Amino acid sequence: MNSHEALFTGYLDDTLTEAERAELQQWLKADPAHLREFTAAVLFDQEICSAVTARATQDGAEAFAPAALPPVSLRVGGTISRAVRWALPLAAAVVVLLGIAQMWLPNRPSAVSSASALAVVKASLHGQWADGREVAVGALLLSGVWDLQNGLVEIETTSGTTLMVEAPARFELVDALHGRLMAGNVVVRMLKGKSGFVMDLPQMRVTDLGTEFGVSVSLNGESRVQVFEGKVSAESHSVPGRKELTVGESVVCKADGTLSSEKSREDRFVRRFPPRSSSDGPGGALYSRSTVDAVRIAAPITPVTIDGDLSEWNRANAFRSACLPPYSATYFVEGMMSYDAENLYIGAHVGDPEPMRNVARDIMDFAGGSVIVRVSTDRKLGWPLKGTFANANSKNPRERPLPDSLSDRVVSIIMSHDAQSNEARMRLQYGFSFLDSANPPGWRGAFRKDADGRGYTLEYAIPWRLLHCENDPPRAGDVMAALWMVHWSDADGRLCRGQLVEVTNPQTRSKPGMSPPMFFQHGATWGRAIYLPKK
Image (tube, rainbow, N blue to C red; front, side, top):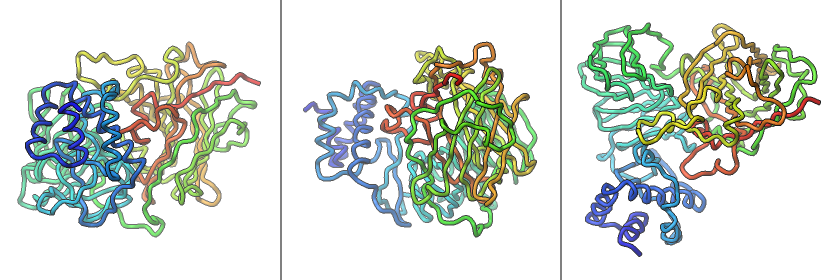
């Protein structure tokens, strides 16, 4: 066994001395290839661990602790160590980009003292971490990166600063007065008379000057700050200059680093917990286990009328998918697609105890209840897709973005019902950089609530020109990529309670380190869209 393999084994068995741990750290820093090899071994270890043992039982005093090296995994005896030692000679063949280390590996449970914690979870409404674990009120959080997939969570740092985190969000606790937001929405509120909390966003730094403010980061690279009380200082990371904002002011930092003032909106952020509804019910992991690898898209037998009634649709090619028990009878989708020379048609019947209540806005509009269908309309890209979110946004000059990553013929179709206007709405995102186009002209959509109030039907017609393929639309025999996602909200129509992911590639959907909510960022996980001939 090589010396570094012995260090790997000792690390995974949690038997390293401080000197050995320092030696491993130095070896990792010496060469990017070392880090890739180590990361591959840890991911392999994680995959086996998830198959042979459940996560540790949690209680209110439990904490989750990432570190410079990822925390030691759970194991049964020495089985995992032997498996990892067997796997190490193969680790170099595993494709693990250096960026994985920069994005941080997932947190693992570890009992720690309250003296080590940076923050505590004060309250949670349907809160779930990205792996499906419910957020425990009273849980202690150490420094590191946290992925909140569902709900609303209130975190209080040891400085007394309150962070209201709205899912889905990815954030890092650096110390009691410093955080980083990589995606999502967070409202920061300091104690009266206190100041100095710093929130770093991908495009700018926001420094508190005694205030309450909201920050958001969208997938298209924009960072935003809005002030509710007091004032903040906003500074771009790449363009010289600083703006001081007061109550009612808002600034957006574009992907190029420029700061621009914009109109504030009270409904952009969730600042307080909504009152509990009697229909909220217990929490639970509203997730699915994908079983469908393809959606079959047929030409309509009769013309499609966009009215929220699917009676004219041929359901022979429909698929049905549901969340895991005990929610399978309540949270489900029956999905179908059709096409002709002018349009792509999407129909769905969604089981939902809180149907058509969406009041969410801007980049979070999907969280209040939505159906998202992601498609490729470029047959040259074929299937599976190779593009990824990381590739589309890579800053590495040696890594050229793939055509799949930037193609404007790879489109996310986000469909939801606006409860305030009582109208259907649609937002399109192009490529894996997710460039937005909200409510473009020409599409048609309709929603209809079930008679028993426990679900809804949607029906959309999207012209091929909006999918950038009007001169060469999909035709019979084409096999391209597609992915379906359904989001459910709470009774107030703002907070995401869970999601279903369906139509996926069975060869990649169980890839280590990739969870279903993140499949939309990885083209290889999308399933097939098969265009059938007209009968």
